[in-house]
Length: 120
Image (cartoon, rainbow, N blue to C red):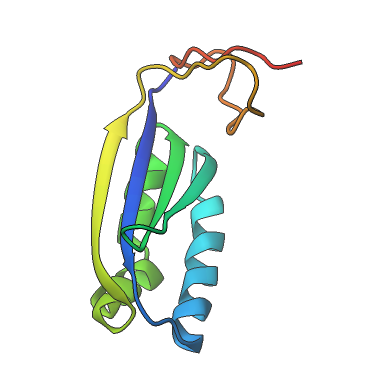
């Protein structure tokens, strides 16, 4: 079984226009169609005015495909129009656990290397 990877995209929120939303929607659809895509978590840091999206994949293939996606590359070239900076963090997920009080954010495959307690 291949490892699970996360890609954390941290964006300084700027001014969004119709082109931004159109590209964002296409990229989101392309992302969901990449091999091994598991899901997305998103949160906002209102103090620092940041948007944080964390995507998960089983294996690196889908992540690599997203990074080479033509629409993603187009948006990346134009990011200064909409964002106040960005950072991307790619990581291999070692473990996931909790106390069971939160709904499970992602449905990791049971035979993956990630330890996830089933919530019933």
